[in-house]
Image (cartoon, helix red, strand yellow):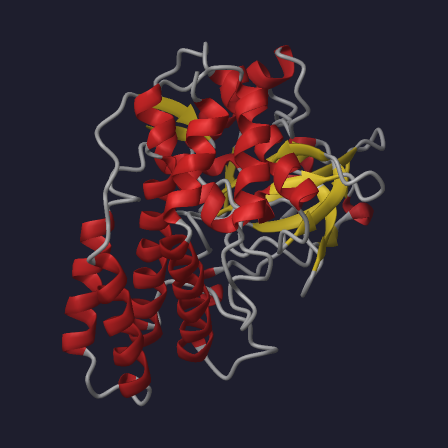
Length: 374
Protein backbone atom coordinates (compact mmCIF):
# COMPACT_ATOMS: atom_id res chain seq x y z
CA UNK A 1 0.00 0.00 0.00
CA UNK A 2 2.72 2.37 0.96
CA UNK A 3 6.36 2.10 1.64
CA UNK A 4 7.71 3.79 4.67
CA UNK A 5 9.85 3.67 7.73
CA UNK A 6 8.42 4.07 11.18
CA UNK A 7 10.05 6.18 13.85
CA UNK A 8 10.37 4.16 17.00
CA UNK A 9 10.77 0.44 17.36
CA UNK A 10 10.43 -0.81 13.79
CA UNK A 11 10.22 0.20 10.17
CA UNK A 12 6.86 -0.14 8.46
CA UNK A 13 4.89 -0.48 5.31
CA UNK A 14 1.32 0.74 5.55
CA UNK A 15 -0.27 -2.67 5.41
CA UNK A 16 -3.69 -3.05 7.04
CA UNK A 17 -3.97 -3.92 10.70
CA UNK A 18 -7.32 -4.73 12.18
CA UNK A 19 -8.97 -2.51 14.76
CA UNK A 20 -6.71 -0.76 17.23
CA UNK A 21 -4.12 -3.53 16.95
CA UNK A 22 -3.53 -6.75 15.14
CA UNK A 23 -4.58 -10.18 16.23
CA UNK A 24 -1.85 -12.29 17.81
CA UNK A 25 1.25 -12.50 15.68
CA UNK A 26 0.97 -16.28 15.51
CA UNK A 27 -2.07 -15.83 13.27
CA UNK A 28 -0.04 -14.07 10.58
CA UNK A 29 0.55 -16.22 7.48
CA UNK A 30 4.16 -16.98 6.67
CA UNK A 31 4.04 -18.68 3.28
CA UNK A 32 5.32 -16.81 0.26
CA UNK A 33 3.22 -16.00 -2.81
CA UNK A 34 3.11 -18.61 -5.53
CA UNK A 35 3.98 -18.05 -9.17
CA UNK A 36 0.24 -18.15 -9.87
CA UNK A 37 -0.27 -15.09 -7.66
CA UNK A 38 2.64 -13.19 -9.19
CA UNK A 39 1.45 -13.94 -12.70
CA UNK A 40 -2.11 -12.86 -11.88
CA UNK A 41 -0.90 -9.37 -11.00
CA UNK A 42 1.97 -9.16 -13.48
CA UNK A 43 4.65 -8.92 -10.79
CA UNK A 44 8.35 -9.53 -11.34
CA UNK A 45 9.37 -12.44 -9.10
CA UNK A 46 12.95 -11.20 -8.59
CA UNK A 47 11.73 -7.92 -7.04
CA UNK A 48 9.83 -9.48 -4.16
CA UNK A 49 11.01 -8.32 -0.71
CA UNK A 50 9.36 -9.13 2.63
CA UNK A 51 8.34 -6.07 4.62
CA UNK A 52 9.01 -5.72 8.32
CA UNK A 53 5.51 -4.55 9.21
CA UNK A 54 1.92 -5.51 8.69
CA UNK A 55 0.96 -7.52 11.73
CA UNK A 56 -2.21 -9.01 10.30
CA UNK A 57 -1.89 -8.95 6.50
CA UNK A 58 1.41 -10.37 5.28
CA UNK A 59 3.06 -7.86 2.93
CA UNK A 60 5.82 -7.82 0.33
CA UNK A 61 7.39 -4.98 -1.61
CA UNK A 62 7.16 -5.75 -5.31
CA UNK A 63 7.42 -4.26 -8.77
CA UNK A 64 5.35 -4.87 -11.82
CA UNK A 65 7.06 -6.22 -14.90
CA UNK A 66 6.97 -2.61 -16.11
CA UNK A 67 8.88 -1.50 -13.00
CA UNK A 68 6.07 0.16 -11.02
CA UNK A 69 6.66 0.06 -7.22
CA UNK A 70 3.84 -1.84 -5.51
CA UNK A 71 2.91 -3.76 -2.38
CA UNK A 72 1.58 -7.33 -2.53
CA UNK A 73 -0.53 -8.55 0.37
CA UNK A 74 -2.07 -11.76 1.57
CA UNK A 75 -5.26 -10.60 3.30
CA UNK A 76 -6.10 -12.13 6.66
CA UNK A 77 -9.29 -14.17 6.74
CA UNK A 78 -10.85 -11.80 9.30
CA UNK A 79 -11.53 -9.47 6.35
CA UNK A 80 -14.19 -10.49 3.84
CA UNK A 81 -12.87 -10.30 0.26
CA UNK A 82 -15.60 -7.74 -0.46
CA UNK A 83 -13.81 -5.30 1.88
CA UNK A 84 -11.54 -4.66 -1.08
CA UNK A 85 -14.51 -3.29 -2.99
CA UNK A 86 -15.06 -0.81 -0.14
CA UNK A 87 -11.42 0.24 -0.33
CA UNK A 88 -11.62 0.68 -4.08
CA UNK A 89 -14.71 2.89 -3.91
CA UNK A 90 -13.34 5.07 -1.10
CA UNK A 91 -9.85 5.52 -2.54
CA UNK A 92 -11.17 6.37 -5.99
CA UNK A 93 -13.38 8.99 -4.36
CA UNK A 94 -10.44 10.38 -2.37
CA UNK A 95 -8.31 10.66 -5.50
CA UNK A 96 -11.13 12.40 -7.35
CA UNK A 97 -11.18 14.95 -4.52
CA UNK A 98 -7.45 15.52 -4.90
CA UNK A 99 -6.23 13.61 -1.83
CA UNK A 100 -3.22 11.33 -1.84
CA UNK A 101 -4.14 7.73 -1.08
CA UNK A 102 -2.93 4.19 -1.75
CA UNK A 103 -5.12 2.46 -4.32
CA UNK A 104 -5.80 -1.09 -5.39
CA UNK A 105 -4.05 -2.38 -8.50
CA UNK A 106 -6.28 -4.92 -10.27
CA UNK A 107 -5.14 -8.26 -11.61
CA UNK A 108 -4.32 -8.50 -15.31
CA UNK A 109 -7.85 -9.85 -15.69
CA UNK A 110 -9.28 -6.74 -14.02
CA UNK A 111 -10.25 -8.22 -10.63
CA UNK A 112 -9.68 -6.29 -7.38
CA UNK A 113 -8.34 -9.38 -5.62
CA UNK A 114 -7.14 -12.87 -6.48
CA UNK A 115 -7.92 -16.07 -4.60
CA UNK A 116 -5.24 -18.75 -4.51
CA UNK A 117 -4.17 -21.39 -2.01
CA UNK A 118 -7.15 -20.71 0.20
CA UNK A 119 -6.19 -17.04 0.61
CA UNK A 120 -7.13 -13.65 -0.80
CA UNK A 121 -4.31 -11.67 -2.41
CA UNK A 122 -4.22 -8.04 -3.53
CA UNK A 123 -1.79 -5.41 -4.80
CA UNK A 124 -1.70 -1.73 -3.86
CA UNK A 125 0.28 1.31 -4.89
CA UNK A 126 3.24 2.38 -2.75
CA UNK A 127 3.59 5.82 -1.21
CA UNK A 128 6.94 6.72 0.29
CA UNK A 129 6.86 8.24 3.73
CA UNK A 130 7.41 7.69 7.42
CA UNK A 131 5.12 6.42 10.20
CA UNK A 132 5.41 7.71 13.78
CA UNK A 133 4.46 5.89 16.96
CA UNK A 134 4.23 9.01 19.15
CA UNK A 135 3.15 12.64 18.82
CA UNK A 136 6.21 14.63 19.78
CA UNK A 137 4.90 18.13 19.07
CA UNK A 138 1.72 20.18 18.55
CA UNK A 139 2.77 20.53 14.91
CA UNK A 140 2.53 16.74 14.41
CA UNK A 141 -0.82 16.63 16.23
CA UNK A 142 -2.08 19.42 13.98
CA UNK A 143 -1.00 17.53 10.88
CA UNK A 144 -2.83 14.44 12.11
CA UNK A 145 -5.95 16.52 12.70
CA UNK A 146 -5.68 18.17 9.31
CA UNK A 147 -5.32 14.95 7.32
CA UNK A 148 -8.24 13.24 9.08
CA UNK A 149 -10.37 16.38 8.62
CA UNK A 150 -9.59 16.37 4.92
CA UNK A 151 -10.40 12.67 4.75
CA UNK A 152 -13.79 13.13 6.44
CA UNK A 153 -14.67 16.14 4.33
CA UNK A 154 -13.69 14.36 1.11
CA UNK A 155 -15.91 11.34 1.74
CA UNK A 156 -18.84 13.29 3.22
CA UNK A 157 -20.70 13.24 -0.09
CA UNK A 158 -19.89 9.60 -0.94
CA UNK A 159 -22.86 7.24 -1.03
CA UNK A 160 -21.84 3.61 -0.64
CA UNK A 161 -23.21 0.52 1.12
CA UNK A 162 -20.23 -0.98 2.92
CA UNK A 163 -19.47 -4.68 3.04
CA UNK A 164 -17.38 -3.99 6.14
CA UNK A 165 -19.87 -3.34 8.94
CA UNK A 166 -17.99 -3.26 12.26
CA UNK A 167 -20.91 -3.55 14.65
CA UNK A 168 -20.03 -3.20 18.32
CA UNK A 169 -16.35 -2.43 17.77
CA UNK A 170 -16.63 0.51 20.21
CA UNK A 171 -19.25 -0.92 22.55
CA UNK A 172 -17.52 0.34 25.69
CA UNK A 173 -19.87 -1.34 28.15
CA UNK A 174 -19.44 -4.69 26.39
CA UNK A 175 -15.65 -4.42 26.67
CA UNK A 176 -15.92 -3.53 30.36
CA UNK A 177 -18.20 -6.53 30.93
CA UNK A 178 -15.68 -8.75 29.15
CA UNK A 179 -12.93 -7.47 31.45
CA UNK A 180 -14.99 -8.36 34.53
CA UNK A 181 -15.72 -11.82 33.16
CA UNK A 182 -12.06 -12.42 32.26
CA UNK A 183 -10.82 -11.35 35.69
CA UNK A 184 -13.30 -13.77 37.28
CA UNK A 185 -12.38 -16.72 35.05
CA UNK A 186 -8.56 -16.39 34.96
CA UNK A 187 -7.63 -16.41 38.64
CA UNK A 188 -4.95 -19.06 38.02
CA UNK A 189 -2.99 -16.85 35.63
CA UNK A 190 0.57 -16.25 36.95
CA UNK A 191 0.18 -12.47 36.57
CA UNK A 192 -3.34 -12.40 38.00
CA UNK A 193 -2.67 -10.20 41.02
CA UNK A 194 -0.99 -7.39 39.10
CA UNK A 195 -3.58 -7.50 36.31
CA UNK A 196 -6.45 -7.51 38.81
CA UNK A 197 -5.06 -4.30 40.34
CA UNK A 198 -5.05 -2.70 36.90
CA UNK A 199 -8.61 -3.94 36.31
CA UNK A 200 -9.69 -2.16 39.50
CA UNK A 201 -8.20 1.07 38.15
CA UNK A 202 -10.10 0.61 34.90
CA UNK A 203 -13.34 0.15 36.83
CA UNK A 204 -12.65 3.31 38.83
CA UNK A 205 -12.21 5.34 35.65
CA UNK A 206 -15.30 3.73 34.10
CA UNK A 207 -17.48 5.27 36.82
CA UNK A 208 -16.83 8.66 35.20
CA UNK A 209 -17.89 7.66 31.69
CA UNK A 210 -20.31 9.82 29.77
CA UNK A 211 -21.04 7.95 26.56
CA UNK A 212 -21.77 10.06 23.47
CA UNK A 213 -25.42 10.47 22.51
CA UNK A 214 -26.69 8.81 19.36
CA UNK A 215 -25.60 10.73 16.26
CA UNK A 216 -25.85 10.08 12.52
CA UNK A 217 -23.19 7.74 11.16
CA UNK A 218 -20.62 9.13 8.75
CA UNK A 219 -18.05 7.44 6.54
CA UNK A 220 -14.91 7.18 8.68
CA UNK A 221 -11.46 5.62 8.56
CA UNK A 222 -12.32 3.29 11.45
CA UNK A 223 -8.85 3.10 13.03
CA UNK A 224 -7.33 6.62 12.89
CA UNK A 225 -4.45 6.12 15.32
CA UNK A 226 -1.20 7.95 14.62
CA UNK A 227 0.44 4.86 13.11
CA UNK A 228 -2.18 4.88 10.34
CA UNK A 229 -1.02 8.26 9.04
CA UNK A 230 1.83 8.57 6.55
CA UNK A 231 4.11 11.61 6.96
CA UNK A 232 6.67 13.26 4.70
CA UNK A 233 10.05 12.56 6.37
CA UNK A 234 11.52 15.89 5.30
CA UNK A 235 8.70 18.37 5.92
CA UNK A 236 6.71 16.56 8.61
CA UNK A 237 3.53 17.10 6.60
CA UNK A 238 0.89 14.38 6.83
CA UNK A 239 0.49 12.78 3.41
CA UNK A 240 -2.46 10.42 3.74
CA UNK A 241 -4.43 7.98 5.85
CA UNK A 242 -3.34 4.37 5.38
CA UNK A 243 -4.57 0.90 6.43
CA UNK A 244 -8.02 1.24 4.91
CA UNK A 245 -9.48 -2.20 5.66
CA UNK A 246 -11.34 -0.59 8.55
CA UNK A 247 -13.17 2.06 6.50
CA UNK A 248 -16.87 1.94 7.39
CA UNK A 249 -19.69 4.07 8.79
CA UNK A 250 -19.59 5.16 12.43
CA UNK A 251 -20.20 8.10 14.72
CA UNK A 252 -17.74 10.91 13.93
CA UNK A 253 -17.36 11.62 17.66
CA UNK A 254 -16.27 8.02 18.30
CA UNK A 255 -13.85 8.20 15.36
CA UNK A 256 -12.33 11.41 16.71
CA UNK A 257 -12.27 10.03 20.23
CA UNK A 258 -10.25 7.08 18.99
CA UNK A 259 -7.93 9.41 17.08
CA UNK A 260 -7.36 11.84 19.92
CA UNK A 261 -6.64 9.21 22.56
CA UNK A 262 -3.77 8.20 20.23
CA UNK A 263 -2.59 11.60 18.96
CA UNK A 264 -2.61 13.36 22.34
CA UNK A 265 -0.22 10.94 24.03
CA UNK A 266 3.34 12.30 23.58
CA UNK A 267 4.83 8.82 24.08
CA UNK A 268 4.26 5.31 22.70
CA UNK A 269 1.18 3.67 24.20
CA UNK A 270 3.17 1.00 26.05
CA UNK A 271 5.72 3.49 27.37
CA UNK A 272 6.09 4.44 31.01
CA UNK A 273 6.05 8.03 29.73
CA UNK A 274 2.50 7.73 28.35
CA UNK A 275 0.27 10.66 29.32
CA UNK A 276 -2.34 13.05 27.97
CA UNK A 277 -1.34 16.47 26.62
CA UNK A 278 -3.98 19.19 26.42
CA UNK A 279 -1.65 21.16 24.12
CA UNK A 280 -1.64 18.30 21.62
CA UNK A 281 -5.42 18.00 21.94
CA UNK A 282 -5.94 21.70 21.23
CA UNK A 283 -3.62 21.63 18.21
CA UNK A 284 -5.33 18.54 16.76
CA UNK A 285 -8.93 19.72 17.14
CA UNK A 286 -8.15 23.17 15.77
CA UNK A 287 -6.53 21.68 12.66
CA UNK A 288 -9.32 19.13 12.25
CA UNK A 289 -12.01 21.84 12.50
CA UNK A 290 -10.28 23.99 9.90
CA UNK A 291 -9.80 21.11 7.47
CA UNK A 292 -13.29 19.64 7.85
CA UNK A 293 -14.82 23.11 7.33
CA UNK A 294 -18.01 22.93 9.37
CA UNK A 295 -18.74 19.27 8.67
CA UNK A 296 -19.76 18.34 12.24
CA UNK A 297 -22.86 19.59 13.99
CA UNK A 298 -22.88 20.67 17.64
CA UNK A 299 -24.09 17.29 18.89
CA UNK A 300 -21.07 15.65 17.26
CA UNK A 301 -18.29 18.06 18.22
CA UNK A 302 -19.50 18.55 21.80
CA UNK A 303 -19.23 14.78 22.28
CA UNK A 304 -15.54 14.62 21.28
CA UNK A 305 -13.95 15.01 24.77
CA UNK A 306 -16.21 12.41 26.38
CA UNK A 307 -15.70 10.06 23.43
CA UNK A 308 -11.91 10.36 23.72
CA UNK A 309 -12.05 9.51 27.42
CA UNK A 310 -14.43 6.60 26.75
CA UNK A 311 -12.15 5.11 24.10
CA UNK A 312 -9.09 5.40 26.36
CA UNK A 313 -10.95 3.56 29.13
CA UNK A 314 -12.32 1.03 26.64
CA UNK A 315 -8.88 0.27 25.24
CA UNK A 316 -7.44 -0.04 28.74
CA UNK A 317 -10.17 -2.60 29.45
CA UNK A 318 -9.36 -4.52 26.28
CA UNK A 319 -5.61 -4.58 26.97
CA UNK A 320 -6.22 -5.57 30.59
CA UNK A 321 -8.52 -8.45 29.63
CA UNK A 322 -6.02 -9.73 27.09
CA UNK A 323 -3.22 -9.61 29.65
CA UNK A 324 -5.03 -12.61 31.12
CA UNK A 325 -6.65 -14.14 28.04
CA UNK A 326 -3.57 -13.70 25.80
CA UNK A 327 -5.46 -14.40 22.60
CA UNK A 328 -6.02 -11.16 20.68
CA UNK A 329 -3.34 -8.48 20.64
CA UNK A 330 0.05 -8.94 19.05
CA UNK A 331 3.04 -8.45 21.35
CA UNK A 332 6.68 -7.44 20.95
CA UNK A 333 8.90 -10.47 21.48
CA UNK A 334 12.03 -8.31 21.52
CA UNK A 335 11.01 -6.25 24.57
CA UNK A 336 8.60 -8.43 26.53
CA UNK A 337 8.59 -11.96 27.89
CA UNK A 338 5.01 -12.59 26.79
CA UNK A 339 1.69 -11.15 25.72
CA UNK A 340 0.61 -10.68 29.34
CA UNK A 341 3.55 -8.42 30.18
CA UNK A 342 3.14 -6.33 27.03
CA UNK A 343 -0.60 -5.94 27.55
CA UNK A 344 -0.02 -4.85 31.13
CA UNK A 345 2.29 -2.11 29.84
CA UNK A 346 -0.32 -1.07 27.30
CA UNK A 347 -3.01 -1.03 29.99
CA UNK A 348 -0.89 1.24 32.18
CA UNK A 349 -0.32 3.53 29.19
CA UNK A 350 -4.04 3.88 28.44
CA UNK A 351 -4.81 4.37 32.12
CA UNK A 352 -2.30 7.24 32.20
CA UNK A 353 -3.96 8.79 29.14
CA UNK A 354 -7.43 8.40 30.65
CA UNK A 355 -6.28 9.82 33.97
CA UNK A 356 -4.88 12.83 32.15
CA UNK A 357 -8.13 13.34 30.29
CA UNK A 358 -10.08 13.18 33.53
CA UNK A 359 -7.85 15.92 34.97
CA UNK A 360 -8.16 18.07 31.86
CA UNK A 361 -11.84 17.44 31.11
CA UNK A 362 -12.89 21.07 31.57
CA UNK A 363 -10.11 22.33 29.29
CA UNK A 364 -10.96 19.71 26.65
CA UNK A 365 -14.60 20.87 26.56
CA UNK A 366 -13.49 24.51 26.51
CA UNK A 367 -11.20 23.74 23.56
CA UNK A 368 -13.94 22.23 21.42
CA UNK A 369 -16.38 25.02 22.30
CA UNK A 370 -13.78 27.61 21.36
CA UNK A 371 -12.78 25.77 18.18
CA UNK A 372 -16.10 24.54 16.77
CA UNK A 373 -18.59 26.93 18.37
CA UNK A 374 -20.04 30.13 16.89
